[in-house]
Length: 113
Length: 114
Image (cartoon, rainbow over all chains, first blue to last red; front, side, top):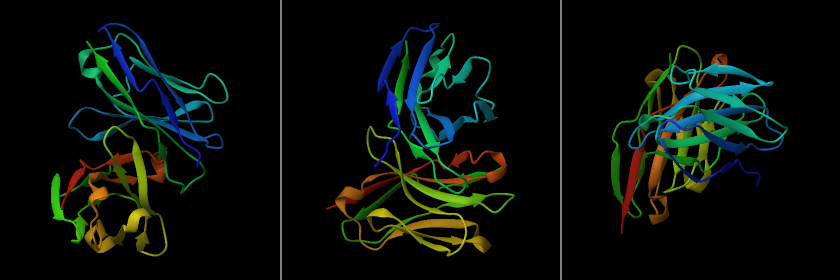
């Protein structure tokens, strides 16, 4: 069964550095998402992406964050000038047409030191 | 705005007993509803979904959920718990008018005792 894959599984970064989290969505999917889960808290929506542009974003997704689909397969989340509170599990998800559920990757655990 | 409430952050059952995980939602439009399961160090795996049609939906691993509009609920059940069911379960609602972004509940950790 096709899967969403995320790399790396664990990223450790110094505060203030930039980090790029990578995702390969399921190949025929059209909609792409990033979520995060701070330890012990809810899974929170960050951003959705369709037709090469952001379709929705949450209040969390400020100027520190950006997303990109640089080629036909990858979908990246960039976090500039990381802060301690950016430490979380980041999940990528993708889905096909309307009514189809989102399929999630295994996540990237981001630790900011 | 949508919201999801899962009553009980921890639920413990004996192996073979009924599993009932509660979920109530708030949505201004007809909702799409989902249950996801998360095993340790893994991502979110879809258990089942409700979009339209039959209000009792069956999912993987013997789980099912019933959409009750009058109660704004979408509780997850399984007749007989298995040790392998121990995991965290998340209820979520999505809104077609907001890019189908998912709003999650706080999660319920299911523990299964032998």
